[in-house]
Amino acid sequence: MQFIEIHLKGVGDPCWADWFQDLEIQTLPNNETSIKGEIADNSAIYGILSSVSSLGLSLISITVSDRAPVQSDS
Image 1 (cartoon, rainbow, N blue to C red):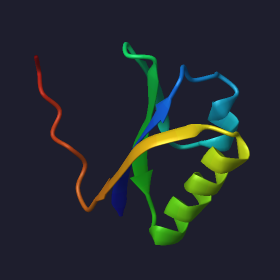
Image 2: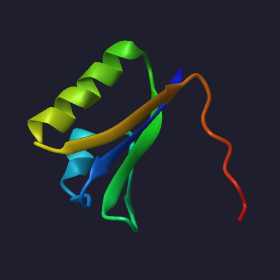
Image 3: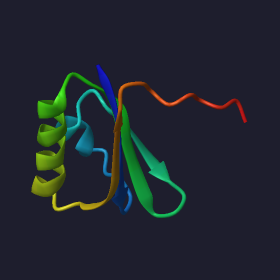
């Protein structure tokens, strides 16, 4: 399993849930949207990026790691 976090320019739309089924979509205060969660493999990354492109979204960053980031309590 891998963990992915994508930052997009603009505010997320609820209909994106159909495109990014198992990923968490969160609107950030700086007019950006974060999409994150566990993915099975590298081919899933390309599928997600294809969805980003199909929706005409502006990609800011993408981070992929073998472990989920540690959540802070603050």
